[in-house]
Image (tube, rainbow, N blue to C red; front, side):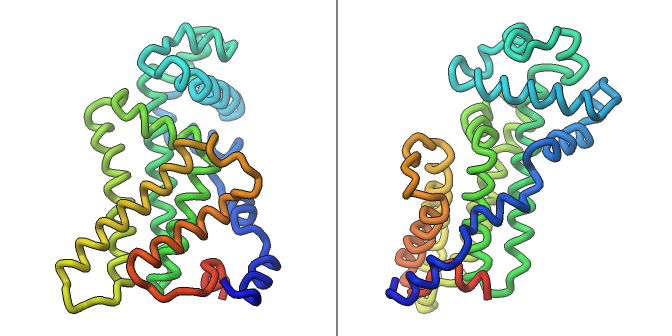
Length: 253
């Protein structure tokens, strides 16, 4: 990055801050959405009380699962951790399995929306930047949700397991499509297609690395914006794309 480019970059507000400010899947909005999408599974009719209980249930699940595993966690454990009675739990969730299904549903919804947002760009470079940043930023904000689904897909019913695996396949395919459009070498189509698939898989691994191992990135200098820039630059190098301009600038033009 040139000195002038570094100066421009330093004047830009953090992209993650802007993304987070407008990201709808957090706080009460997130649990209101879960309530709305699962009315058939939630016996509580008043949204206010349902939201409060759901927040407790999911927070407790995310606290306990990394320690003991979701399959080992009982509803009695959940009752103790949340302070809700067993009746209170059953009024908010139909079963322990329903928690995992709701988490899968939310992650799938978020990822689908990120894909739709990226498709608003005609330029594949801008679309790739939007998608990579979107995946990284959303999975940072919702780290427990993405972490849970990665490790606990086996806890889902078989049909939902397939749906969970499909989320990753769609992510790779969308990245592959955009990367394929950016590959300049059209003389060897087979090689180019293979390279796009490999680089897309690498890109998804970089996204997963960040939300699966957050403890590695606690250094305040290693911001998610800086990490996103490094990921994009690595993709550019992998496909021999001559792209010296800072990643965020094209998005903001």
